[in-house]
Length: 185
Image (cartoon, rainbow, N blue to C red; front, side, top):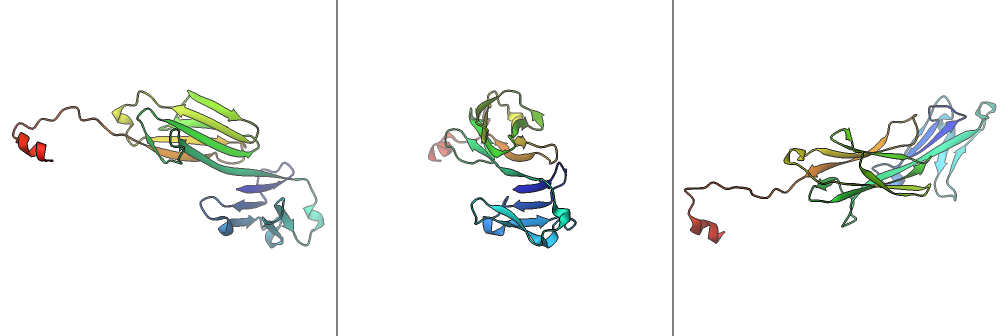
């Protein structure tokens, strides 16, 4: 998602949004009180550019833009994108790219997780990791969420995973069950 602002204004004038859709089906929005139909985003040029036709004196100003990219939650061993967190000693990673530099926050069932590790922060990409241990059965279907914030002007961008558990059988009480039936299965 790319947003354009004029001066230090808090409301965007133009947006280009590809979240959850293919690049050629991006959503374009232009503030009707600013550019209206005169603005369009050209992605085929290098660098991409916001073009404004029929420039008017009212268009004068300093413009800035923010680029927001996806958060990805990955399972550590497989490196695969995941929306399910299996609580068998696994670690979850979150990657977020964007400018200005984002801050990543982890939450489990809406409670902040203080114990996370910042693995990379090179000014372009932030990589954070949480490790879950001591999971309890009550965690089943809880949510793990990673939020990225880089401006107070917008709500945090987030990605959510659901906690899934595989339980070990603790006790089976079957006094009337024939042991030969169990052996055949």
